[in-house]
Structures are given as structure tokens and as C-alpha cells.
Length: 105
Image (cartoon, rainbow, N blue to C red; front, side, top):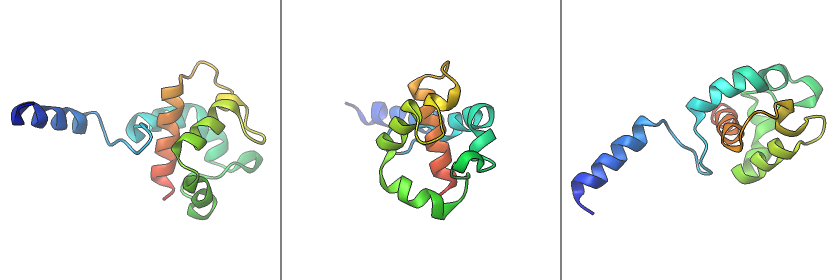
């Protein structure tokens, strides 16, 4: 692969937004969070860890993105699968989780 092709790929990757390990795009996830996750993760309803609460998120973050995404996809505790938004794709959920993690480190 040429240096030009590698550079072009890197630039395109940066243009797509920052990606956390696990494939989530926090920038895209903010929209999903605002539309689907804020009601509980913005307020702490039903024991949901609030966005930005480092102490509540630390043990969850240690489990890794795949575990967090699995819990969001299948439901955990009072949270229904996909936060009740069955129209969301796995990538939408992964992006929302990436956003919450990025704001809660």
C-alpha cells in the first residue's frame, strides 16, 4: 500500500469521528443518547448510571465495550433491551455506549 493511500485512509478515519476501542463513534452516539437514553441516563432514573458520573461508570467501563453493548442490547436490571427502542441498530447502541463512556471517564 502506498504512503498516499495510508494517509488518505487516516484522514478519512479522522473525518468519521473519534472511535473508541469496540467500534463505537461517540459523536454519532450523542444523537442516540439525546433521543433514547437521556430519560434515564441523564437523570439516574431506575438506578441508571448518570452520564458523567465517573464513580458509577468506572466498574462498568472496566468490563469493556462489548459487555456494555451486550447489556444495552439485551437489557440489564430495570433497563429493557435497547432501552426500549427496538428500532435502534446494534451500531446505534454501540455509538450511544461509546458516547456515555467518553463522557464518564
